[in-house]
Image (cartoon, rainbow, N blue to C red; front, side, top):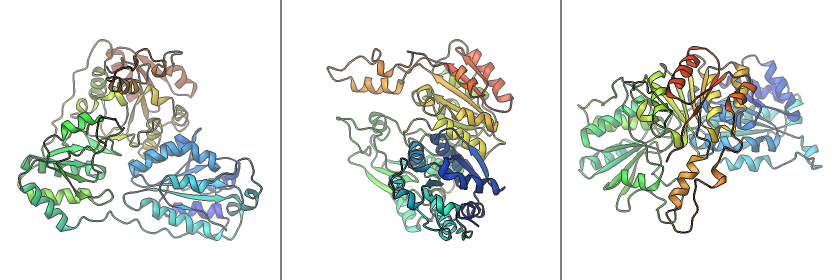
Length: 519
């Protein structure tokens, strides 16, 4: 058995079922090994950022790692942007990156690079077997690394001679370990703090945004008056009718500071203490009020759901969670607006949908509009690097082929990874993509307006760096060129008809929804 086959068979034994790929010459033996292992599904993408974002989306829905197959250092570098988002999402991902044989690297060929340094940037373990015997053991170790709570990115660099040489054996993957429990004395201390009567806020994130954590947080809030806030960007949120819903921390410092005004204690569960997304010269970086104290109920990676449930049993033993009743907005009419497109989605959202939210400035009304829609999961771009949405949709659809995926993507974000549409068409994935086309980098206009309160700054409405109309992007023709049926909507009635048709027909579809930018 050669090293490439040992690696692939080790992944299978560790529960991996999918490898998202964009291979090159150096990885051909790995491609051959993938083809020889029928338990592994290879999903080809045309760009490495789609590969890595798809692995992220798959992991968030499947709850286990997918693998990526990338071509040397440059291919790995192309995928780093969405691996950055994956790291912030704590998604378990195993990267397989091909490399030249050691003897060939010694002559410094054109594609030689420091692959290990790129892997280190992701703050996850990097392994490189030096002979075939190490391929299986390093693959098994990387799998164990990836699923270590809360999840991380593990990378295996495979020299080509290790891949093609015999003498390898399948590694033995370690069993995944559960998230560590929070100590009882920590939970008791937080309970005493809440009972003390001082104003407190509870910031929840990660797995705490699933049903058990949401219900526990709702019980705590109902019984004690604690303010509950959801972290700004979350890897997966259960949302919709029958579940509690909480406001997200504001994007801008002023918004978050207002949400936390008057709070004496900030308690975190599965999330970090709130910080500003960007720095502003006249605003603090840490958004916890200066006279408030931060308390950690559950670190990121600990069992925050169980900790919240135990805390609720202590401070709210007789209280039930307050959940959102089923409700849908009326279908709107007239030109599309920032509110009406959200109402159309909420009115038509199918049962068990997976919503990809990369709507950026266009989606401020989305969470409220969909709060009473049928229960669904929401995946967000967690690291702030644009272009994750359509790849996330690919991975989510591969992980859950029985669930409809609705990807809500800002036009600027869409242009980073449009080739994800090709993979959707090739795999016939059940993804409906709605491009929110406001012809601009509207979030930058908003930031400029925030910045331009100071004298001497320019007009964001005339700055060409924020304008996407010269030339205008035709997303319909772009999608059709990748094999995805597409339409354009400028009114709520058109979006209603087109979205209903797309959701009723299996396979990928795209709708270019033309809306005005946020003010």
